[in-house]
Image (cartoon, rainbow, N blue to C red; front, side, top):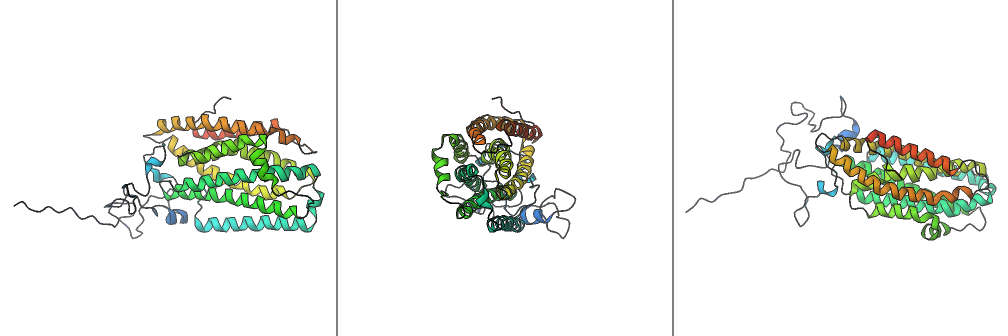
Length: 356
């Protein structure tokens, strides 16, 4: 008779013999980015277990086909260490809710004070149509991008990437909600204000179909990092900032509207945080010691696809600049700033802007 062989027993506990604080009483498994770990790192890094780092067993949760709960195959990008990324904004659950709460309080106070003073009644009539039709359409773009990021965060390989993507989604969905509530509230003060005009404009107005195509192409991508890249590196500077900063925030006050700029301004601060996170992540990948060349080629392919869509979207929006009575800025100037902006962003990543 042959001896019965038994499979080795694997522990479900952390199994690394040596880790960052194995010789101390801190029991911290990661290397902090600075000299000391931040609160953000303590509550974020390695919260999502990775079998390649400390677990002797495989993924704690797997799909029926045996695939682990998280997979590197969810993106075409490659990394020698996915856990290096730490979001520069250091945002986690608690700080995120605190910041969102402050923004909502500010937005609601601005709207309430503006309505109390009767400000919407003094908006230029042509500008009211712009808000009704085009700001009403823009909320659908923000909602689409937020929905895309919500889907994308599920596939991130580390908690740090997931957090940055999900907070980005939350900002977008909050802005879409803010715009919806804002237009509904001032609509009660403005006669014959059509709450459904924005949706019709988004679906039917020829000027918005390029933006729809760009947003829906991002939503349809199956690579979560392509979605994150397309939104923050391409769409936002070429379309998002172009419309929000280059049009709404510049043109509102000359047309008697001092409420819209502060409502929209929170989105510009959101983007600065999202952009910092995105640049940090994609810079790490583009300069990865093992996979940097592969990732740069991949990012250039994403640029060729999404820059063409974003350029088409921005060109389609050009006629909106001529609709208000007071026109303090020209589309050409706003467009030049957006092109300069993406050029600087790509310069930080070592990438080239495709020629139109």
